[in-house]
Image (spheres, rainbow, N blue to C red):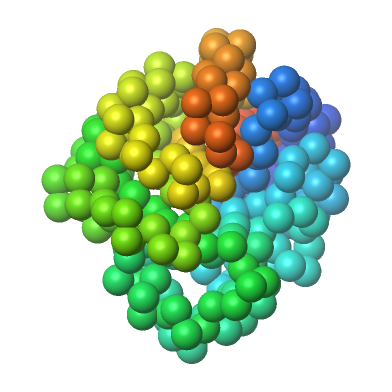
Length: 247
């Protein structure tokens, strides 16, 4: 009754509880964890997120601008379809710029400079989505470059690979995705500096297998020689607020 409606009311203590869990996973595993702004971008809490996580991931120019003005740490930007008019500013803001295909990378190569680290999103061609229309690996998906078509020359000038298969899921689907994907990208491990496991990880859920995740990340880092990134979004704000309305 103390707030104007409609309004989202978020409990900072609950947010800190979730962030502490993510920070613990980060510390124990050696991974870097970015907050997915697409899922949670309440910028009043940006300083709090900055206390625990390594930065944020954005999905275009406007989120990148918000990240630059309010958040701290690394900024990773991925967009399935960049506008040429936005590229110079996105590059000036982002630490990591992830392209959707080698063709997109080639199209915007003239904009790139040493200030930004280039990544490539791949489609693992391994389905874990529980709802077909939200599955980025569904047949015909244009989210990411099909891993079956990936060749060494596609990684020229690319520092890391990004993939995403999960949506509000626990550890087992991530492990299955990696088991399917690893043999296909193993030949390129020495060409890469980092691997981004994307988002959809419900790490702060009470029944999530966090110890298994920590050991898994350690193994991936050891066998690939790469830095590992995760991009949870909803996990940052899970069970931390309500929508207040009135009739």
